[in-house]
Structure formats: C-alpha cells, structure tokens
Length: 320
Ligand SMILES: [Zn+2]
Image (tube, rainbow, N blue to C red):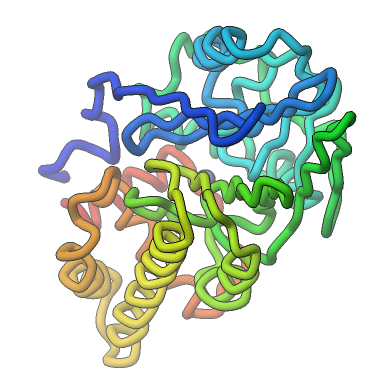
C-alpha cells in the first residue's frame, strides 16, 4: 500500500480564486493551480471556455461572470475531454458545445472511465457531484479550425487543433486582435503536467512549436497563473517542453538499460523534482505520467484507458 495519500485525494483546502479581465470582454478565472476557465464576450453573446467539473462548480463561476456581462452563452468550448473540464457543461445553457472531433470520440470511448478516475483523484473539484446529469457530448466538432465571428467590431475567436499533445484532441482558442491564447492543458504555468493520456513526442515537438508560433502576449494555460508578456509566455511554453523532454529522456534511459517501471519513476522523479517538485499536483501526476511515457516508448500508440482500479494499481506500484 502507498504511504502517500492517493493522487489529490487529501487536497481538500479551498483555493484562492482570481478572475481577471485580460482585455475588453476577455476573462480568465485561475485558482492556484486548479483547472482554469475563461470567457470571451461577443457583441450579443458569450463564449465560455471550459466547463469545470460539475454544474454546481460551474454556477459559482457563472455567478462571477454575470457581474461583468449578462449576455447569453452561445458557445461552450471544451479544450479536451477530461472530466474536470467537461462535466459542468449543463450549467451554461449553451446553444453549441464545441470541441475537436477526437474529443467527441474520446468521450464516447472512455468518458465514463475518465469521470470515475478523475473523481477519485481530485474529489475536491467535484462540488455537489450529484448535480452532473451525465457525460457531456459536444454538439459541434471540427478537425483543424473553427472561427467564431464575435460580431460588431470584436473580431474573431479562432479555435485550432495544433496536433496531438496532452490528449488526442486538444484545441486552443486564439484572439488574434488581443493576442490572447487560451492553451488548455497544452501549456501549464507553474503547475505540474498531467501526461497520462498524452503523446509526449508530438507534444514536446511540433505541437508546442505551433503554440509558440502564435506569439501570444498573454497565455491562459490549463492550470496556474495567466502568463503576461512575451517573456512569461515563452517561459511557460519552455518549461512545459522541458518537463516533457526530461520525462521522456529519463524513462527512455531506464528502458534502454532494461530497468523497471519503478526504476523509471525513481529516475524521472529525481530529475524533475528540483525544478518542478514545488508545483501543484506534481506528486499526484508523476506516476501516471511515467506510466504513459513508458507505454508510448514501448510503441503503445493510444493511451490505455485509466480506470479507478488502474489508477490505484499504478499509484501503489510507484508511489507506494
Ligand atoms: Zn486535461
């Protein structure tokens, strides 16, 4: 049995919430490393970005957003399929729920298992779990790009797929006029990376290259503070890439010398803890990250589905 509390199951203290206005009609809600959400005002509607873990949690966010604008939510954009970002969707009463084609498929394929897994790992995020009516199914999906005309003089919100990364179906939301990028979990800002469903090699290479190429002036990552200015944006992207690169190198080296998964975990932990150990959810994520990196390097093309049972097995094996 593990000596450390499982994943984030013992993380029960409420986090400090910050809602920031990044530009006229552009909002970001961050909370000390909890999953971030955002909103962009159109001329007569709102686009919300990410849904939170439950409708009850989402309503707390919407109550704050309603102090800025009472426009109806026309679009709810989901950056990827993970439960803590999708299961609150019903609270938004959105006309369209927009995501990548692969996100739709992943929710059908493994949405229920992911719900059970994430609830076990991060129970604090699931405010009133009984308020979840079921899985969230996107109503509108795309493969490469979808542009939302915000109306009036507000320009466009551009949703784009940048390649495989944190999952098989991550999208980003880009405001070209304001140079603001909502990057989802493809970039973390001083919060640990979860890579249990990831494609590390693509993510650390071409996918992050595409993210960097936006030249964003402000970047809202999946977790952590908003990166502001070119230096902070570049740093958030570079640190995300470094985490992935070091993780892959350590796991690969252990595999090459015929070590075990546990050896790979110890090596990755030793190499990463100095720079990343103080970031939220580092200890929580690392066993799952190493497990998937190991699989990817072994030629397992698509991530194995995490279930509540598999979560515990890997945890006890690596953090025990
Ligand atoms: Zn995620």
